[in-house]
Length: 232
Image (tube, rainbow, N blue to C red):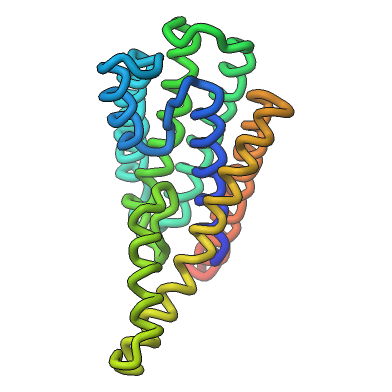
């Protein structure tokens, strides 16, 4: 699916921004930002340090569960593994949504229900981070844009350089064509996540939930023809 990376990047930007706005600066899609915030809060800046600490084991749990699931799925059918992981992430996303609605309005960062809500969100995004490494398919990273932006800048410089061989420029142009939609989708998702939370609160997480179900159905649709060709 050519649009898969863009949809996943939009989900990552959307959920990460929504959780950052709603849960006292919590990053759910990647742990690097939480390490930075934990360091800042240790010096007395910000709040919710315990929630950010608990997000780390929840994220790890999401990755570990994904690994166990993929190892139990037939290795010759990566689409089936992708479908299962999408369903697992969708279920966690729905749980994140309902938990957020249950704790709204979020007032205390150290409240147990709020911490559990953040942990569910981190586990959901742990599944997405693991997905790209566990399921073999062509694509680009879709949860953290630092590497993508770096590669996009390098590729742009190669394309513009008159000393670069034409074949190297062609490779850079092809790679840039794959990177840019993902970067733009992440940025658009981040904007929409903040706006959606402002207007609908945690109910806004129903949108990535539906998007993940759509991706699961698409993956299952790709799987069926392969089974048909193998059946006598």
